[in-house]
Amino acid sequence: MSVTEPAPMQQIVPDACTTIENYPHEGILFYDVTTLFANAEVFKQCIDELARRFEGTYDVVAGVEARGFLLASALAYATGKGIMTVRKAGKLPRETFREEYSLEYGTAAVEIHCNDFPTGTRVLLLDDILATGGTLVAAAKLVERAQLQVAGIGVLLELDGLGGRTALESYHVESLSAVTE
Image (cartoon, rainbow, N blue to C red):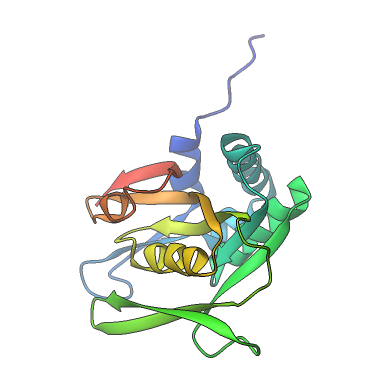
C-alpha cells in the first residue's frame, strides 16, 4: 500500500471554500471561507502553513475584521504571540489611528488602538481573501502610522487579476492559494 501525499495548499484552500455565484452582486463569484473554517483538519493545515511561512519574522499577529480575526487568533495561540485587531471604524473604545480606503461604491475605514505595542514591533497582518487589496493596504498604513513594522501579509486565497498583489507590492505577501478572476 502506498502513502498518498497531501494535496498542496493551492488545491486545498479553494476546494474547502464554498463558491456562491452572483453574490453579493450579479457577476461576482464569492468564496465563502466559513466552510474552510468548519473543516478542522484544513483549518489546522492553513494555520500551520502560515506559521511555517512567516516563522521568526513577527512579534504580533493582526487580524483584519472579521474573518481575519479567526486566522490571527488561531495563529497567535499556536505560536504564543500577541494579537491586534484591525476593526471597522467606530468599534474600538480608546484612542485610535484611522485609515480610509476606497470601495467599489464609496469609502470605508478601519482603525487600530494607539499605543498597544512598543515602537518597532513586527506585525503580521492576516485576512481571508486578497482581492483589490484596499483593506490590507489601509491596515498596513495603520500599522506604520503606529510606528510598528509590517512583517508580512498572509491570506488564505488570492483572487488574481483584481490588482491586490500590485497594491501591496512593497510588502511581503503570502497567499496559500490563488484563483484567477
